[in-house]
Image 1 (cartoon, one colour):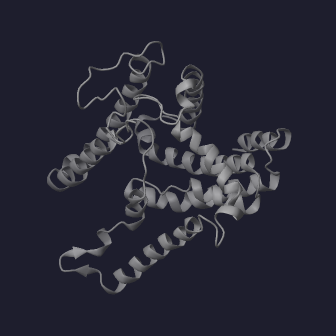
Image 2 (cartoon, rainbow, N blue to C red):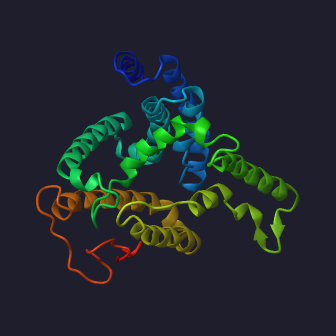
Image 3 (cartoon, rainbow, N blue to C red):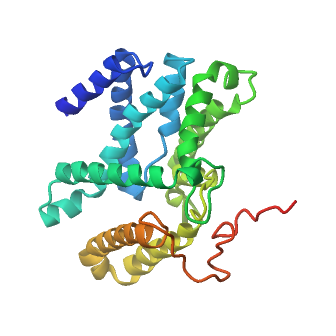
Length: 300
């Protein structure tokens, strides 16, 4: 941790990233504080709350007019939250398999960097376009630059009376809704047989406003929901012994299997290792646009 802190401080001081050292320290402290509350939600529901734009908003307030500095502030702060989440997610698996978490984190960083560097060089033409193709899209990467620029101009875009004033206000609305739900639950815990504690407002609000980007990102939602429903409803209620004794290793297998499959598909099918070899064309595998048919290309 000390080594990583020093390396980050050297980057802030030596490189022209327009981020003051004091803002770098604030970014790390912000990430540490938010990660504590985010991991409470993560441990309870298996998913945290997206806080990357919150860090950009804080950066827009303390270092306005610096889009590059805003992007690095978000990098330093949200990377703490992401790393804590990844380490917590693999904690039980690491204990069972006697694997060192830090080793896996360092190895993953090296592998991810190598793959990312190769993809961005070999698929540059697709990644710089608006929509990409049925395999690759640069929308997520382009969003970093857009968000950094917009939050750096927050006093022109997000203040009261500005075009997007409702964006920061929406954070207060979301927090107020959760507090109100908690107060209602204190006095009315159940409505009939329905327990109000079953309502997960943070998750509901997050996914109600989720807009997927890329060519086939929505395709994973159905399978994720199906697997989650099968595990949490059927196995937990009707096969409790299996759920208690083996669900953790089944989850590890699904997680590792999907990651390995994605790695193989990236090089063998999607064309990172050479020419792409797409699967046969049919209604469920649209190659002339978006795989999930959303959005449908508009003909002129």
